[in-house]
Length: 264
Image (cartoon, rainbow, N blue to C red; front, top):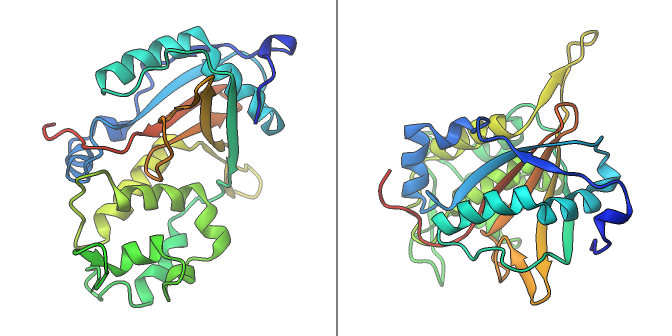
């Protein structure tokens, strides 16, 4: 955890970038799916510029400065009030930062899912019995249950990738999620949001494309305990900071588990 005062070192300061609005928040088809998955109005992304060079080893300090920055707090408070979140009304005293691998430049990571029995040849998800969930399927079982025979069709390292985490978040959805019968909507929405959030560049000599963004999962704490992205831990309440070190832009991508909007 980072709890040191930003002021003692070279502090980062941030400015909102309201014009940099991700396309997934403006696309009607995507919004319709997020509404169906009970995530509309509860999933969002806000971008900011920052003023110092960023190094991955300074992620803790960067995140602490971020959640203490007055312009960040002001923009987050407006957003959170509009979405009925708990506002950040007390000073953040520390942050928890988890580096998230982000190296994928294609959707090949998901190829094993298509040939292991989770899907029918048509792309329809195979249903299965579960003691707790009446309408369960092999895809969610692969995502959630480590003792499932399909859990490691996508390897341990690949499961840690931001691309896979994003896919899992979308598949599991919000509180009143209506699950898809086919995998295609999850794959296409994952691809769209990933392309929105992640910066990549092509090496002029090798022509190889590589990710330049640094991603980390964040939790902020005030004197009472965890305050962001939620007061209590919930797998589907999450916040990621995604840094483009060249443009000096950072995007906060977050979701608060609950009942999403029913209208576009």
